[in-house]
Image 1 (cartoon, rainbow, N blue to C red):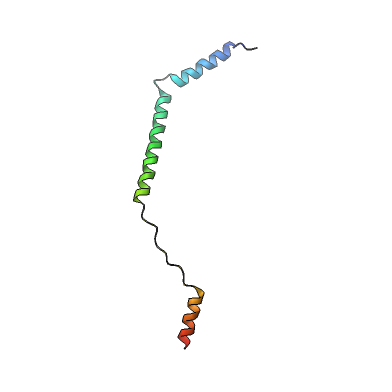
Image 2 (image 1 turned 180 degrees about the vertical axis):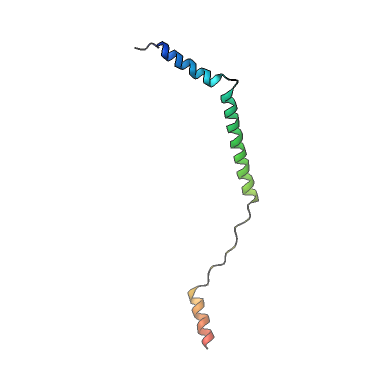
Length: 75
């Protein structure tokens, strides 16, 4: 117990070969990931700066104003 068998060493070597072998595949993937995050952040900043103000919506007429107009029209 506590010793590593040949299978453990083969798995460790395979993981190291995948992570560090192949001319920096992981580094390229992480670099692309970082570029995507930067592009997303800059896009969010541009949207905030360019976004028009929300449209002004007038409140609907109240029922008392409508009733007062109807009463005034009857007179």
